[in-house]
Length: 204
Ligand SMILES: [Fe+2]
Ligand SMILES: [Fe+2]
Image (cartoon, rainbow, N blue to C red; front, side):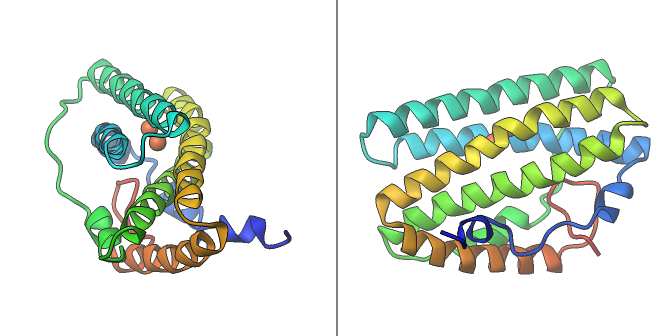
């Protein structure tokens, strides 16, 4: 179907300037700390879905693999922090994830579909921005550029799995409709956030 490519897209692509502003040592350190928190949350989110989606072997295996991959990303990020003498510590919330939750429908079973699609949107946004950072850091920090480039491939697969489960729980038309509403909501959440050295900050 001709609309397939656009139905998978985010509502507001990130301008390259967002990544250009992240080049300093301080920003890169903050982004790495953010990444550790994000990977840990991603692993926890995937594990929670294991208990919420039906006993379908393909989904259970897929989500289990996904959760393990996020933990591998988490450990890799922790190693990078340590190698750079950066301390893994609490970090202020950006408001991105909380803002996305406000767009989720309240009633089951569509609530679960929305939650899976929000997980897919977070993967898609992370994937897009890590791609920008990989390109932007290539000349200033090769190690970090390679790190982000490696993660991009996995996060794209994660987006696909969450979307596939959402489609299986309802149908493609419902998912397309909810994707449109939720990606528009995500764009407005990001639009209201200030720029910061965080993966899910605003562009302003
Ligand atoms: Fe990850
Ligand atoms: Fe992921």
